Image (cartoon, rainbow, N blue to C red; front, top):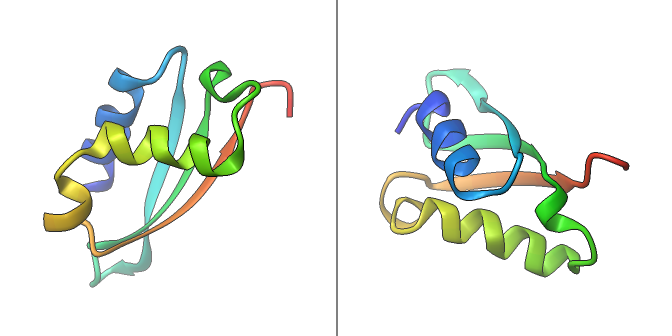
Length: 78
Protein backbone atom coordinates (compact mmCIF):
# COMPACT_ATOMS: atom_id res chain seq x y z
CA UNK A 1 0.00 0.00 0.00
CA UNK A 2 1.51 3.31 -1.05
CA UNK A 3 1.53 6.41 1.17
CA UNK A 4 -0.98 7.96 -1.24
CA UNK A 5 -3.33 5.01 -0.83
CA UNK A 6 -3.06 5.25 2.95
CA UNK A 7 -3.82 9.00 2.79
CA UNK A 8 -6.86 8.39 0.60
CA UNK A 9 -8.23 5.66 2.85
CA UNK A 10 -7.88 7.82 5.97
CA UNK A 11 -9.35 10.92 4.29
CA UNK A 12 -12.35 8.94 3.03
CA UNK A 13 -13.13 7.63 6.50
CA UNK A 14 -12.69 10.74 8.65
CA UNK A 15 -14.70 13.95 8.55
CA UNK A 16 -12.95 16.93 6.90
CA UNK A 17 -9.65 15.13 7.26
CA UNK A 18 -6.24 16.02 5.91
CA UNK A 19 -3.72 13.19 6.04
CA UNK A 20 -0.05 13.42 5.15
CA UNK A 21 1.74 10.08 4.90
CA UNK A 22 5.32 9.35 3.95
CA UNK A 23 7.70 6.45 4.22
CA UNK A 24 9.84 6.31 7.34
CA UNK A 25 13.06 5.23 5.68
CA UNK A 26 12.74 6.51 2.16
CA UNK A 27 11.49 4.48 -0.76
CA UNK A 28 13.34 1.32 0.34
CA UNK A 29 10.97 0.44 3.16
CA UNK A 30 7.41 1.28 2.19
CA UNK A 31 5.75 -0.69 5.00
CA UNK A 32 7.12 1.69 7.70
CA UNK A 33 5.04 4.87 7.49
CA UNK A 34 4.83 8.25 9.21
CA UNK A 35 1.37 9.86 9.20
CA UNK A 36 0.05 13.21 10.37
CA UNK A 37 -3.73 13.35 10.44
CA UNK A 38 -5.74 16.51 11.13
CA UNK A 39 -9.50 16.22 11.60
CA UNK A 40 -12.30 17.81 13.63
CA UNK A 41 -13.41 14.22 14.31
CA UNK A 42 -10.67 14.12 16.97
CA UNK A 43 -12.21 16.96 18.99
CA UNK A 44 -12.92 15.77 22.53
CA UNK A 45 -11.39 12.33 21.89
CA UNK A 46 -8.49 10.91 23.88
CA UNK A 47 -5.23 10.28 22.05
CA UNK A 48 -5.93 6.54 22.16
CA UNK A 49 -9.37 7.06 20.60
CA UNK A 50 -7.94 9.40 17.95
CA UNK A 51 -5.44 6.72 16.93
CA UNK A 52 -8.16 4.06 17.01
CA UNK A 53 -10.19 6.11 14.49
CA UNK A 54 -7.22 6.11 12.11
CA UNK A 55 -6.53 2.40 12.62
CA UNK A 56 -10.20 1.64 11.97
CA UNK A 57 -9.99 3.63 8.73
CA UNK A 58 -7.08 1.46 7.60
CA UNK A 59 -8.77 -1.79 8.59
CA UNK A 60 -6.96 -5.01 7.71
CA UNK A 61 -4.10 -3.12 6.06
CA UNK A 62 -2.74 -2.46 9.56
CA UNK A 63 -2.02 -6.16 9.96
CA UNK A 64 -1.27 -7.15 6.38
CA UNK A 65 0.26 -4.30 4.37
CA UNK A 66 1.55 -1.81 6.94
CA UNK A 67 4.26 -3.08 9.24
CA UNK A 68 4.63 0.09 11.32
CA UNK A 69 2.79 3.40 11.51
CA UNK A 70 4.10 6.36 13.47
CA UNK A 71 1.00 8.46 13.96
CA UNK A 72 0.45 12.09 14.92
CA UNK A 73 -3.16 13.25 15.27
CA UNK A 74 -4.59 16.68 15.95
CA UNK A 75 -7.65 18.85 15.52
CA UNK A 76 -7.54 21.79 13.10
CA UNK A 77 -7.46 24.20 16.05
CA UNK A 78 -4.33 22.62 17.56
